[in-house]
Each structure stands twice: as structure tokens, then as C-alpha cells.
Amino acid sequence: MTYKLIIFFGFFAMVFSANCQKYSDHYYQRKNQFEATPDTEDEIIFLGNSITEGGDWGAMFPNKNVLNRGISGDVTAGILNRLSEVTSSQPTKIFLLIGTNDLARGKTESYVIDHVTSILLEIKNESETTKVFLQSILPVNPAVGDKFSGHKKNQELIVSVNWELKALSKKMNVAFIDLHKKFRNSKGALKPKYTADGLHLNIKGYRKWKKIVAPYIK
Image (cartoon, rainbow, N blue to C red):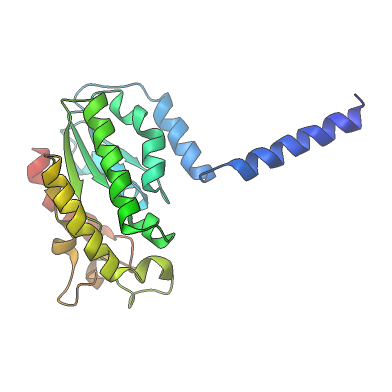
């Protein structure tokens, strides 16, 4: 095989690999980082997407072994794809928040519920002593910011999915934390004081979240 052919096939392999990559580069960078980190005892894990990733959970709960396993852009299938790393330490608690990115990508309510069910079942099967806290999807606010329109159009759908998540938590005997109720205004939208773009939380938002989950951490 000539040198030019070797270069061609090498380039083709790289393009093929990039096109077949299911998730973002950031997803795989974070996933690899998590997998390279040794397991520790009594881990409390916050698991989710960018909203979870944006929280400095270790600093918020300095006297606990709290770990951030959020990945920006993550979806329910992405959680399933990396869940073995989460359960390998047999964590004492997992706080799960996922689903808004699925809905923004056009996934149905039943799709989200089915995948969250699979996540909960795998946690129970792989780490049966772990206490799981299923958190509702946060509200959004279309009136704040000019980005993430695909997410912020799903106000009513998020409410509907949250009802199903609450029913699922009861069915599977896991705790349910209704973040939506705590963060919404009278119109059902994310309170502007907690966000700069209508989707993600600001510092005040994370302080509010910390206050909500603190009793379950302690």
C-alpha cells in the first residue's frame, strides 16, 4: 500500500469515526474524566445535564463527598451509556435530573419516561443500597433571553412529563423532589431571578437548589 493510500484511509477512518460519534466531544471528555477518577466511599452524586454540571456541588456541601456527574447537552440515553461509572462506587445517594434536552430534540413523553425507568432499574440492579432522588425537570421561561427556543417552547410538555415522573417515582419506590414547583412563578415559568437565559440557572438559582436538596443530603 502506497503512502498516499495510507493517508487516504487514515483520513477516511477519522471522518467515519467523527460521523459515527453519537454524543458531543464534551460528553466523551467528561465521561473519560469520570472513568479515570478512582471510586471513593460514601459518594453522593448529582447526575444530569448542563444544569447539573453548572453547580459547584462539592463547594456547596463541603462536609460531604458530593460529586458532580453532569454533562452539558446530555440526554437520557447518554446517562444510560455512562451509568456503569456512576454505580461502580456504590454511591450512598444519587440525585437525578434529566429530560429537558430529550424534549428539545423532539423525543416524546413516553420516550423520556421509558428511559428514566431504565436508568432507575439499572441503578437498583447495580447498586441496590443507593438511595435515588428523582428530581422534576425544571421550568423554562421563553420571555428571558433569545437562545434555547427549542427548550423553552416545551413549558406544557415539561409539566406533563413531571406528572409522569412523579407517578414513576411512586411506582418504583424512589424519592421525588419537585424542583419545578419551587422554581416557577404564577404563570408556570422559571422565575427570572433564577436565570439569565430562561433555561439555565444563575447563582441565585443554585443557592435555591441547594436549599431544596440540603435536607436530603444531611
